[in-house]
Length: 137
Image 1: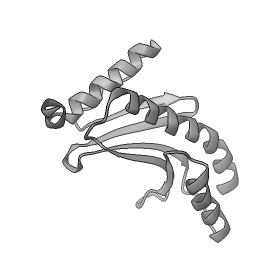
Image 2: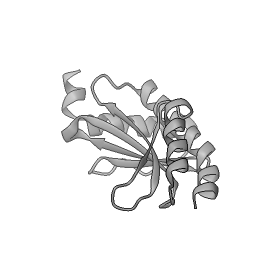
Image 3: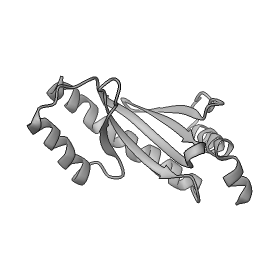
Image 4: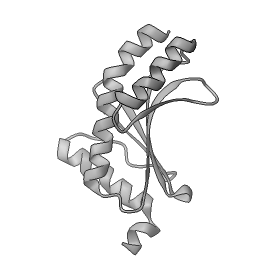
Protein backbone atom coordinates (compact mmCIF):
# COMPACT_ATOMS: atom_id res chain seq x y z
CA UNK A 1 0.00 0.00 0.00
CA UNK A 2 2.89 2.41 0.68
CA UNK A 3 4.09 1.94 -2.93
CA UNK A 4 0.60 2.82 -4.20
CA UNK A 5 0.52 6.02 -2.17
CA UNK A 6 4.03 6.97 -3.35
CA UNK A 7 3.20 6.74 -7.07
CA UNK A 8 -0.50 7.27 -7.82
CA UNK A 9 0.23 8.19 -11.45
CA UNK A 10 1.84 4.82 -12.08
CA UNK A 11 -1.07 3.05 -10.39
CA UNK A 12 -3.70 4.88 -12.48
CA UNK A 13 -1.56 4.37 -15.61
CA UNK A 14 -1.76 0.65 -14.88
CA UNK A 15 -5.53 0.87 -14.45
CA UNK A 16 -5.85 2.66 -17.80
CA UNK A 17 -3.67 0.06 -19.51
CA UNK A 18 -5.72 -2.79 -18.01
CA UNK A 19 -8.97 -1.05 -19.04
CA UNK A 20 -7.75 -0.91 -22.65
CA UNK A 21 -6.48 -4.50 -22.70
CA UNK A 22 -9.73 -5.90 -21.29
CA UNK A 23 -11.64 -4.20 -24.11
CA UNK A 24 -9.08 -4.88 -26.81
CA UNK A 25 -8.77 -1.16 -27.59
CA UNK A 26 -5.81 1.15 -27.91
CA UNK A 27 -5.63 4.16 -25.62
CA UNK A 28 -2.88 6.72 -25.32
CA UNK A 29 -0.86 6.13 -22.15
CA UNK A 30 -1.26 8.39 -19.15
CA UNK A 31 0.88 11.47 -19.76
CA UNK A 32 3.75 12.40 -17.43
CA UNK A 33 1.42 15.10 -16.06
CA UNK A 34 -1.07 12.39 -15.09
CA UNK A 35 -3.67 12.99 -17.82
CA UNK A 36 -5.35 10.35 -19.97
CA UNK A 37 -8.59 9.83 -21.83
CA UNK A 38 -11.15 7.18 -22.77
CA UNK A 39 -13.97 7.43 -25.28
CA UNK A 40 -17.14 5.46 -24.57
CA UNK A 41 -20.03 6.14 -26.91
CA UNK A 42 -20.18 9.87 -27.63
CA UNK A 43 -18.51 10.69 -24.32
CA UNK A 44 -14.83 11.49 -24.02
CA UNK A 45 -13.70 11.06 -20.43
CA UNK A 46 -10.51 12.81 -19.41
CA UNK A 47 -8.71 11.32 -16.45
CA UNK A 48 -6.56 13.57 -14.28
CA UNK A 49 -4.35 12.28 -11.49
CA UNK A 50 -3.84 15.25 -9.20
CA UNK A 51 -1.16 13.64 -7.07
CA UNK A 52 -0.34 16.84 -5.17
CA UNK A 53 -3.97 16.98 -4.01
CA UNK A 54 -4.27 13.17 -3.70
CA UNK A 55 -7.31 13.25 -5.99
CA UNK A 56 -8.50 11.52 -9.14
CA UNK A 57 -10.65 13.79 -11.33
CA UNK A 58 -12.75 12.47 -14.21
CA UNK A 59 -14.31 14.99 -16.61
CA UNK A 60 -16.66 14.62 -19.56
CA UNK A 61 -17.70 17.71 -21.54
CA UNK A 62 -21.44 17.73 -22.26
CA UNK A 63 -22.04 21.23 -23.69
CA UNK A 64 -20.00 24.14 -25.02
CA UNK A 65 -20.58 27.37 -23.09
CA UNK A 66 -24.33 26.94 -22.70
CA UNK A 67 -26.51 29.97 -22.03
CA UNK A 68 -28.06 29.24 -18.67
CA UNK A 69 -31.00 31.13 -17.29
CA UNK A 70 -32.36 30.41 -13.83
CA UNK A 71 -34.70 27.64 -15.05
CA UNK A 72 -31.95 25.79 -16.94
CA UNK A 73 -29.46 26.19 -14.09
CA UNK A 74 -32.02 24.82 -11.64
CA UNK A 75 -32.69 21.85 -13.97
CA UNK A 76 -28.97 21.04 -13.98
CA UNK A 77 -28.68 21.31 -10.21
CA UNK A 78 -31.69 19.04 -9.68
CA UNK A 79 -30.32 16.57 -12.25
CA UNK A 80 -26.97 16.58 -10.44
CA UNK A 81 -28.78 15.61 -7.27
CA UNK A 82 -31.07 12.88 -8.61
CA UNK A 83 -30.07 11.77 -12.12
CA UNK A 84 -26.30 11.71 -12.59
CA UNK A 85 -25.16 8.95 -10.25
CA UNK A 86 -21.65 9.58 -8.98
CA UNK A 87 -21.16 12.50 -11.37
CA UNK A 88 -22.20 16.12 -10.98
CA UNK A 89 -22.56 18.98 -13.43
CA UNK A 90 -20.00 21.77 -13.25
CA UNK A 91 -19.05 24.82 -15.29
CA UNK A 92 -15.45 25.37 -16.34
CA UNK A 93 -14.42 28.67 -14.72
CA UNK A 94 -12.55 30.02 -17.77
CA UNK A 95 -14.54 28.69 -20.76
CA UNK A 96 -18.04 28.33 -19.33
CA UNK A 97 -18.24 24.84 -20.85
CA UNK A 98 -20.46 22.37 -19.03
CA UNK A 99 -18.90 19.17 -17.73
CA UNK A 100 -19.84 16.14 -15.72
CA UNK A 101 -17.20 15.44 -13.10
CA UNK A 102 -16.32 12.84 -10.55
CA UNK A 103 -13.77 13.48 -7.80
CA UNK A 104 -12.31 10.65 -5.74
CA UNK A 105 -9.43 10.53 -3.30
CA UNK A 106 -6.57 8.34 -4.49
CA UNK A 107 -6.16 6.49 -1.19
CA UNK A 108 -7.57 2.98 -1.41
CA UNK A 109 -8.60 3.33 -5.07
CA UNK A 110 -8.60 -0.07 -6.79
CA UNK A 111 -9.08 -1.08 -10.40
CA UNK A 112 -12.72 -2.12 -10.00
CA UNK A 113 -13.67 1.26 -8.56
CA UNK A 114 -11.70 3.06 -11.29
CA UNK A 115 -13.50 1.01 -13.96
CA UNK A 116 -16.88 1.70 -12.34
CA UNK A 117 -16.19 5.44 -12.24
CA UNK A 118 -15.18 5.54 -15.92
CA UNK A 119 -18.32 3.61 -16.91
CA UNK A 120 -20.54 5.75 -14.69
CA UNK A 121 -19.38 9.11 -16.01
CA UNK A 122 -19.24 7.91 -19.63
CA UNK A 123 -22.74 6.45 -19.51
CA UNK A 124 -24.12 9.59 -17.87
CA UNK A 125 -22.32 11.93 -20.29
CA UNK A 126 -23.41 9.84 -23.28
CA UNK A 127 -27.00 10.15 -22.06
CA UNK A 128 -26.89 13.90 -21.38
CA UNK A 129 -24.56 15.39 -23.99
CA UNK A 130 -26.92 15.41 -27.00
CA UNK A 131 -29.92 16.42 -24.91
CA UNK A 132 -28.11 19.28 -23.15
CA UNK A 133 -26.32 20.53 -26.22
CA UNK A 134 -29.65 20.86 -28.04
CA UNK A 135 -31.54 22.44 -25.11
CA UNK A 136 -28.82 24.71 -23.80
CA UNK A 137 -27.17 25.96 -27.03
